[in-house]
Image (cartoon, one colour):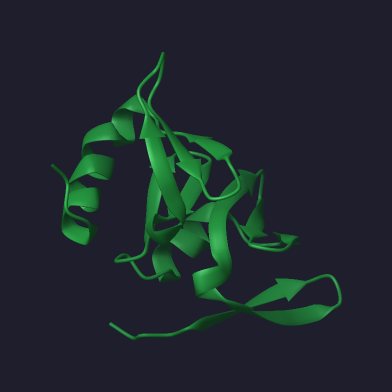
Length: 114
């Protein structure tokens, strides 16, 4: 596996280079993907599946049909009515029932879970 720090994504004006460590989450918007970083949001003309295939699996996890999160941006996890992730900036991302077990297994690989 490559250890890339940046990703080049297409925009309406060409391409922009983004530092992967700044990503909070990616959200499906039809055939587009909205990338939320620490300081901006960018709408990219690629679907979420295309990002899932290229992002490093040790840092990014698909937690819902519409969301991929950067594991390093997780601040807390809530189990109120439904399982959800709280990211830095208090952004709330749902975890689907079908991804729940996978999510916890992935967390065990990247963090100490007691």
